[in-house]
Image 1: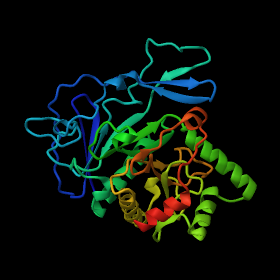
Image 2: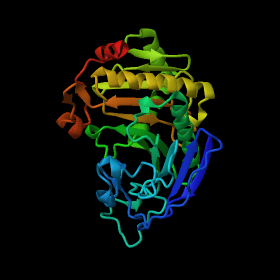
Image 3: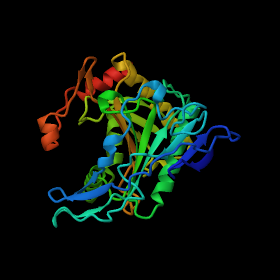
Image 4: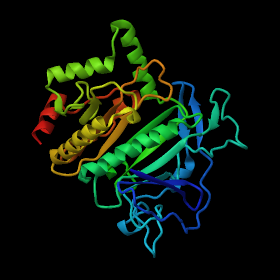
Length: 358
């Protein structure tokens, strides 16, 4: 893997990851761009004791442009995009409309209420372009190219985790307009948060309580139990297992767990990374064959916080879709949106069987 770093016209960093160590990429961005917003804020919800990111400048972000105006495609002599190169394997750059920014400031602002403290929305948001091919999907990537994406995730996780003030790194992909995607080019994102996210905090609380009560690891025990039961296992290999969780929240949901406990992507060995690619491409293919059409999904890496001194976290990937039938979507209704109490539309065991048959 060859990594090349440069800066865009407004000072944002861009990185190229290439399979060919001899690859040469154009590094000059000739555009005239306005400065990136320094307005992201964090406000503390006094009822839930959680940080909320506020980034009103994102209202102006690019929204479903036509293919010939895609900002993630390579640049041409007549059209300059976010990526100055005429071609690329994988490209990662700082988001032009970030929810968090290392440049964020609260100069001139005051807390909205004494009970609602506010801080600068410090952090970093990056866009990960999986391929220069606008019409491709992650599932279409050759194994070597998909492995390059995994290595790029690992590299960014390690580098972002080293930034003082960063508490957690989240790599993810959202696919499909039904999910809310605003750019159709195959891409994902990386968020580097200055706090540990609510979902991760809750999982670590549960893992800590389980360790105290049972003397073992809740993630490892659940993985072993699912592998023994087999009923919800979709596919597996030497290093990974993909299964539908018994208490799935989404109509179609699969978790991919490494058999060895690691906290983050950089900790994976070469063999584990290769086996992940093999299993992930397999599961993505099954997703798209389930209803004979590309399935909208979110693919979310659950990594340990930067400070996981207790070693409670177990790296895994959660892949889920809001589609519950070929012609039906699941919307978060009153119970889910208002109370956070999920109601699943499909039986997890049925979903696992359907995916195994695809």
